[in-house]
Figure 1 (cartoon, rainbow, N blue to C red):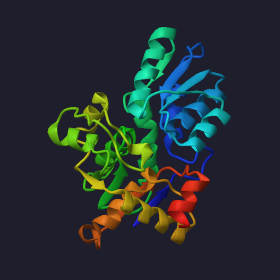
Figure 2 (cartoon, helix red, strand yellow):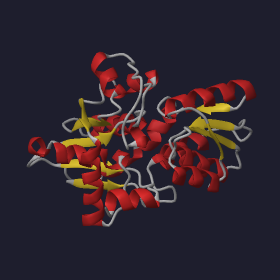
Figure 3 (cartoon, rainbow, N blue to C red):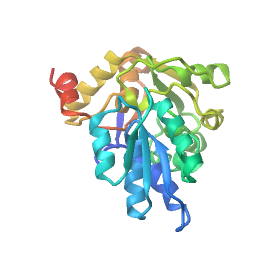
Figure 4 (cartoon, one colour):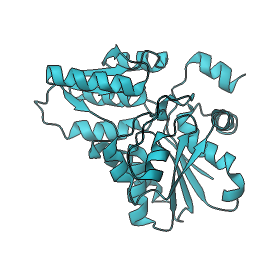
Amino acid sequence: MFLKVETVNPIRSFKGRGADFLVSSLPAESPALVCASAGNFGQGMAYAARKRNLPLVVFAAESANRLKLDRMRELGAHVRLAGRDFDEAKQHARGFASETGARFIEDGRDPAIAEGAGTIAVELGRWPHAFDFALIPLGNGALLAGMGTWMKATSPNTRVIGVCAQGAPSMAISLQHGRPESTESVATIADGIAVRVPVPEALADLAGVVDEVLLVDDQAMIEAMQLAFRQHGLVVEPAGVAGLAAAITFRDRFRGASVVTPLCGGNLTSEQIREWLLG
């Protein structure tokens, strides 16, 4: 089992890769930026926008993780709370862009975001031996599209598997049916992959890239978080250990194989750390 650590950086997640690659490609006189985020993508955007003196507005759900909200503000973003979940917040962000002329950045739709995330797979390609399986958390799809595209091009025998939260299965259902399929609600502690309304462009990007999608429940993610903390001293949030949770849940299937997964987010509140890691 190989763990690609993406939590030990200024925003504690992989999201800075795609956000910075996208923002770096914008013209110097770019209009203000607006996006929606459960917290990690917003931090990546805030970090990249601040570096280039671009104003950024982030819409987040009213129930969003308070630590992530505070971190986005500390990085210079103007945070607005709107909607009961991430997808409703995204609708408000889209409306704000239409009203103000700001440029709407959508995680999962803009190709540069997936390309930036794909650099994780470029780094993994330096390992001297191919992996049998790559277990990649699946939310909006940028991480899976970016990593999967590179892996399919350079290591075609590696099976690329997306991992969704059982309580947020819209992307898994959509890929199975070959069309966007929304759910009425989400019910998972993994806010980073709690997608209710799939991005059509993301589904198109994943065609031919992902071999299958697995679902993991919240308890498996808690077990994976505790394992990462106990064995490696790493604080990882639920969405960030979805791949490791899949390896635990389906351990018999992967026994004896070479498996890689990114640990891709580590923004936990002190209350969450006490409940999930120290409880």
